[in-house]
Length: 256
Length: 314
Image (cartoon, rainbow over all chains, first blue to last red; front, top):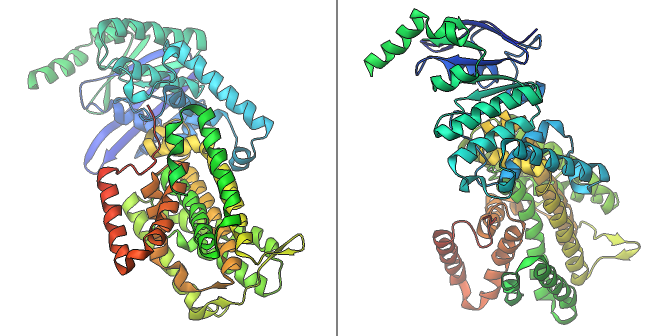
């Protein structure tokens, strides 16, 4: 079944159409990529899916429920986690505290529990820490849990973001250019990690990526967009040889 | 009082901190045995500002919001207790009512404004502070421009609280309670949510944190601190007048938080203490002390913009 269904999604900013009549389906447990030249509307589409932008027209169904009008925090609670194109950590907090933010929707202590600290609250705090450490372990930086996020190397900051997204215990993980700024070695590890996220945690993955090598290696299905419109869809092999895709990418190179 | 403030910096580790904290607490408890009424009054006043600073620190330090009208919450608490005790209600019973009214005030100001950016929020809170004061000035129930007078001092288990030492200890207990509550809030799921929002609101929302509700909680809790402090202020002073809650009052509390170091509990306490004690200690230099005080504040802000005792992380 489809975990995510996007129907005729359109997003306009005044006269500019960032996403135009975009439709696609994402099957549960799949790894899918959304690609396209710079400015094609990939991140805008992502922002619609996660509630940061409100779609002008169109429908987004997550597990059969419409989420187009929901706020970001509600969508996260429903089970969609995201990372950002430019790493957006809580820089002056520790790595562990960063990941603990993901547990917010999976815990419930309120004002009175914070002040009175009943056993339930103490147990919950312990669980938040424990799950967060497990997430850090999963992405391979458990040893850096107590460092300040701002002091980590770029590659490790990316890992903190993934761990933080995993801590929300999502059903669907949206990665916005996860390979940007990573070296080849880190990219290979990323491929493994994405597969591990899907295979061992059973999380569906949708990524936006510029690195074609990585996209071809990891994706089971690729949706290509240009100027906000879908121009191709299919397996890596099919998309690679699609004349419209080649044109979109080469045309972009000519201009630059 | 000022000399032993440096002790915590000399010690390192939790053990040293506990020892120095214990020393400070013992000194505070013993002080009324040797001090005269003037000293006790000044320190009680410092305690009072510490409670307010701890409350405002939740709003501006923990949650990173702006509030230029904090005195409004303090006014709500003071007037609630003033009016109700004059109507014959027991002082202690007026506190929960003052809490409820301050909560409502927190929601009234926070609800519609928290979607605004910080500079607009500054203007709206400033306006709210002034509206509260002017309303109090013009209502009959609040005693108009002259305010409420003759508020009865409370008693505790049949023992009437009248001496300056009584209020000294009462306000000290309040400071301790306020510090514990603030500390626990800061180190909780809610406290972390405030920090996440302060650092990056979009990223916090992407992690499932509701920014509007979380910020509203900060306003509400800040309001409760102000309201409770106001209740005790009313019975200590036995009078409440609208001019007590002028903008300068809000500015003073804000200054205590910023001077001490935003987001840090000890900073808010230290800031309030310096702010109250400085003009008293330098009373001998006469009128110019406010000028000197102003210059000192500016110098501190230039050379230590993070405050005297900021939130330190490494």
